[in-house]
Image (cartoon, rainbow, N blue to C red; front, side):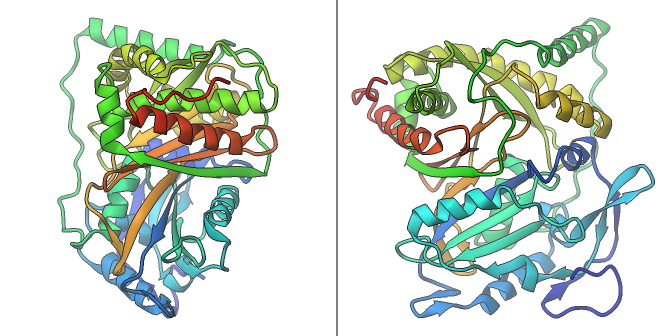
Length: 444
């Protein structure tokens, strides 16, 4: 149990202070959370032998002690501060409030799973389990049997604490070689006042973005509809350098290559069940914003139309690269989506999102650590991010580069979408792209 006062539980930490009001974006992520659609960022990884992972067993006491040292250290300015805070409602506001941190609960050993497939199934189940509100909203699970060398590890954090970019920084603070250094807390920067013409143009674009939610630009498809409780997760990975080289051939980026693979995977999932495939699958793609302030969430939204029926992955990639250059710049200039800048707007957006037909799928990609990390001395061999699916969108893809490889996780509604077919096709598409397009994905 987490206590705001009273006796201090064993294996716990406490930091004085708190009472900081949540930013609009962070509070929005509390409002759109629900038992049916859990709003968490999840990082799944495979560990090797070393540190708390020994040939004869797993020493959880050593892991908890290592994490306690990280969390008790000089982490001012780091997202790790949120690991000892819970969210409380205070009149009409949500605030971060310091509390006891019980590492016996937050850091746990699970029952064994049966290899990677069992690990994927466990992660899929975790994407439907809410994190309790009366504790700091995170947990770390050690999963025996997940990998050929050592256990799996799962770090699950509520989206009010971090988005994908902040989640990567958090993992580096938690698992990097050096403890996070004390940093000056980010201060609000007053942007120079824009000319009225620019402000008017900015407002006009914002109105168009909000109005787009009401447009039915996606035909009826199995990718959209009420999201069921049974989820599927499939992992894939590819060498980053090979993917970047292929993308460079057509003036694209690694993210463009990922979207080309995503288009093929989504199409394969529909065809596996004999479903109709729309000519275009609009994808919602987050874009990191340069000015985060103290918020754990700072992303713009880029809409990318993904063409279907194109068997040549390089042709698909070239078409996407033409679109994303200008779209990314516009998304960064516009900032966070207008309806998610306040708690009340987020409530409206959550209702609209359950019936929208403007986007067909989610795809996100963040740059992760280039150097290998370790968890209490155990090497982190591979890592995959898993993002939530929300509203009425039943299929999502999340990617993160780590130590030279791009880990991609498919997360979908297993009751309505063939997530296994999407995962298999994604691996084929990524392999074809890494080969520079010389290896073609099979025609569907």
